[in-house]
Image (cartoon, rainbow, N blue to C red; front, side, top):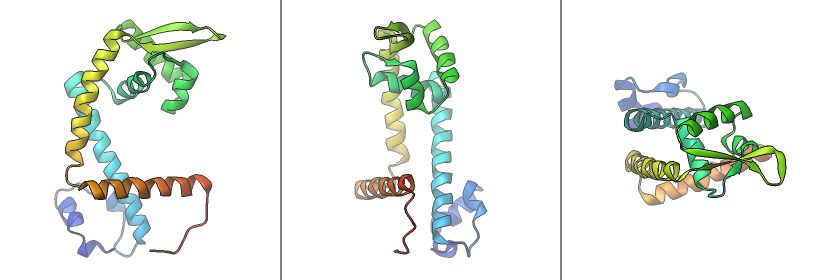
Length: 177
């Protein structure tokens, strides 16, 4: 994989949009170039989603993700579990919960089986609000990935899943490909 034969690299470079890929040299290993391209792609897509959520709904990506997790659990989640799913501290979840509760988007109730825990759930208003945002969010994602055919999307999904399992297990690197 050389940057000289990569038309997308030239387009991105001309548009001054290389981002993380600018760190790679033409002699760098293909895997390093892939890592930087994945990082740049993720950063670029996430920035655009953040911008659109702010512009369209006046909401942060963190609040959207918080509501997305609760949407999946109609009976709510313990705040500790929500914190683990979002991979943030309990303090972050408490702050978001306080804000969204004031806005009528979430409700907090004591856990029936643990006096120290709270269960947080979306209110009916929160569910409707999230459904509206999620519908547009899905369209944005479809739009951004529309340059890839479905076969490629499925292959990338599968291959990245294998990569994640490999990294999780800490397996030694393979010299294939």
